[in-house]
Length: 173
Image (cartoon, rainbow, N blue to C red; front, side, top):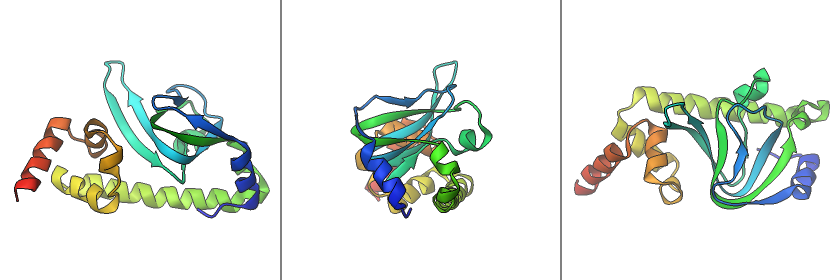
């Protein structure tokens, strides 16, 4: 995403450290900010009443972390945003994206997100678990070194045990 001078200045003035395990947003809260991730790893995660976690997505350095649907519909967060690794973020009011002079930035974010979501949907719907894993390896090669097996398995819709079996099978071949 191309950053406007206004956004670059805002990001620099709002930098703050992030520790592993820190919560940026809790499920059910209203979202007021987006977070620009300077470095570290953040996940969007759903916690069911039965204690099951489902990872929606991961955010890495240089990405904006926020829940697009909840932003666009002004609804409470369906997911929590949690740091998986220490890093640094800038907290920017979502109202920044509503300002007339920032509509190019907003459009870039929306187009980028649409492309990402379409690719993810394709990956999940059209592939076997092994093909999904191989897709992650080819499209996001750094993920395996930055994510736990549990988080990676959750993202591709399988159990950690299934992921372990896929890895074993691929390493034998």
